[in-house]
Length: 245
Image (cartoon, rainbow, N blue to C red; front, side):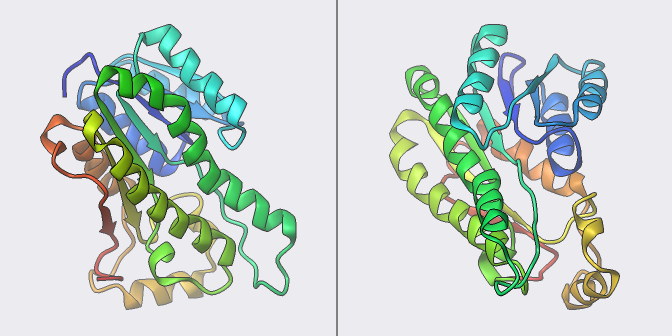
């Protein structure tokens, strides 16, 4: 990757997004650290990235199209281009369907899935005009297998897989690749909300016998964002320790 590449990472103030932002910075990209409400954490990520690359933080709720559009517009105004988009923003609202509220369903689908449409749509004109782009969507193993008490999350993550494959078909002739990463359970703040007994069961069912580390997701994202990955598109790559094969 050359230093001229510019990457936008949504939900990059912590967890997987933070790790991906750092990996892209180390690879030579300028990085936009997007956040919705974690301003202090986002600025800390920028401070770390400034030691190795060029980074700025931009606040935007990417579940809202106008704000996603503003995120891309501000990126273009500051850096003059966008080459890499990592759609990582996401939340969980676990509940059995009998107990799930319509708001729980709406929020998870909107923040996890609709945000992928919003940011990709907002960036598409520039990428097509530039004849270059790397779009990386963060799905989940549970979008492939299902997970008890997570119909909203699983539906959103499965939707990301379909979105990835369809968009990859549309953009291939413009030299824009679109891929998805499907992690298992990762050592993040979000994963810490999983009850200890359930986490232990997941680890027991995982052949490698542990949770993933954010850096293990990030290193794959950095590769998919590179010129070396130009022949990979429409793929869903699992990083799950063998939990789903």
